[in-house]
Amino acid sequence: MNRKNNPGATVAPPSESARPARRAVRPQPRLDDYAAVVGPAEIDELRYLAQQLRGRTVKMVNSTAVGGGVAEILNRLVPLMNELEIATKWEVITGGEDFFAVTKAFHNALHGSPYELTQEASDVFLSYNEQNRQSMQFGEDLVVIHDPQPAGLVLSKPEGKAKWIWRCHIDLSHPHPGVWGLLRPLVEQYDAAIFSSPSFSRSQMGIPQYLFFPAIDPLAEKNKKLDDKKVQEVCDRFGIDRKRPILTQISRFDRLKDPVGVIRAYKMAKHYADCQLVLAGGGATDDPEGAQVLAEVKEAAAGDPDVIILDLPPWSHVEINALQRASTIVIQKSLREGFGLTVSEALWKGKPVIAGAVGGIPVQVIHKLTGMLVHSVEGCAYQIRYLLTHPDFARQLGRNGREHVRANFLITSNLKRYMLLYLILLKISSPLVS
Image (cartoon, rainbow, N blue to C red; front, side):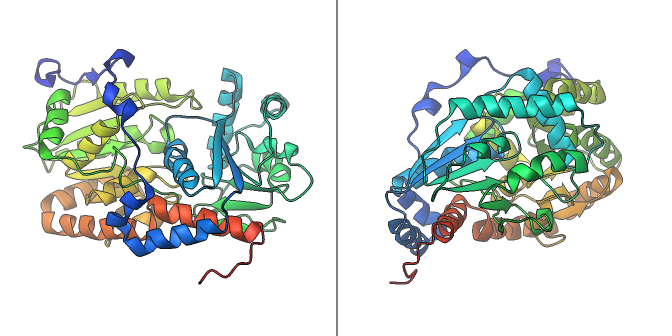
C-alpha cells in the first residue's frame, strides 16, 4: 500500500490466506542455540537443574493461545521444558463473550480502574471456571495457572503432593477491593504465587510469594536479527518513510496502553521536530474491547498522513520486529501495565524507549540509564523532542537497555526461575553444585 495516495488511512490486516506458509513450519530453536546469546555456562546450569526434575509433570493453563505476552512466553517456555525432559502441557480455558467481558472488566479493576462488581458478574466468572474445571484433568506434579481468568480451577487441586502455583501477570498494587475480595480466597488455596514486581505482592496472604520477571525469546521471529533489506521491505509495504524520524508504539488496542495519549504527545512534539508515528498492534481472544479502542484511535488520528495505524494479525512477528528496528524511538506510554514485554523487545534491539512509569515498566526502563520514564502526555512529548535532538544520548540509552535485557529478561532466565521454584515446592534437596 502506498500511503501517499491514501493519507491518514489505517492499513488493514492481511487475510488468513496471506499468512506466509514458511512461518508455520519453521523449527523452533533448541536450548543449545541460546548459548550464543547467554553463554554456554548458563545452558550447562539449566541442564543441571533439569536433571533433578526429569520425569516430573507440569501443566500450564491460561486464557488465550495467541495475542499478548503470556501466550508468547508459554510458546517458548513449554517446548524448552519438554526438551529438558520435564513433561509439560499447555491448555487454554474456554469461555463465552460474557465471560471475557467480565474478566476484561476484572483486569481493568485489578489495575485500579473504577468498577462496580455485581452478583451477576461474580456468577459468570465462577460458573465458567466451574465448567472448565469439570472438563479438565489435573494429574500433574505441578500446575501453573496464569492470571485471574482461570484462577478458580484451583478447586480441582487434589489432596496429596501436587503443587499449584498462581502466576499473576498484572499490576496488583492497587486492586479493586471487591474483585480482589472475590479472587483472594481462591488464590490462597494455591501453594505459591508469582508476581512481576515487588510492588505487586499482597500483604498478609497465607502463601509464599515469589518475584519472577517475564521474558522475551531473543531467537524468536519477533526478536532475532533482521537484515536491512527486510526492514526496508516492511516499511515500504506500510508506507513508512525511513528518511524521517519514526516513533512507534507496539501494543494491543487497549485504553490502558493510552494509544490516544501517544497521538497527542506526537502532535505536541511535531511542532518542534519532524516525525512520523506508527501505532501497531492487534487483539486477543480474551480482550473484547479491542475493536472499540481501535475506532477511537482512528478518530484521533484522522486526517494526519504521518500517523500510521496497523491492525496486525497475531502472526505478524517479523513485521513487528522490522517496525521496532526501523524506529528512531519506541514508546510504551501505558497508564497501567503488568510488565510490558514490548519494552524489553525494543530495548533488546538497542532502541531508546520512552515509557510510562507504571507497573513493571520501571524494572526495565531505568530513567536516564536504559530509557526515559514519563508520567503525562506532556512529559512524553518533551522526551520525544529531547531524544530527537540528542541522538548520541539516545543511542547510549539503547546500548544500556540491550545489556539490561540480556542480564534479566530473556527466556533462559525465566526457565531457570521456574525450575528453581519447582525444586523448592517439591522439596527436592539434591545439592545444586556437583
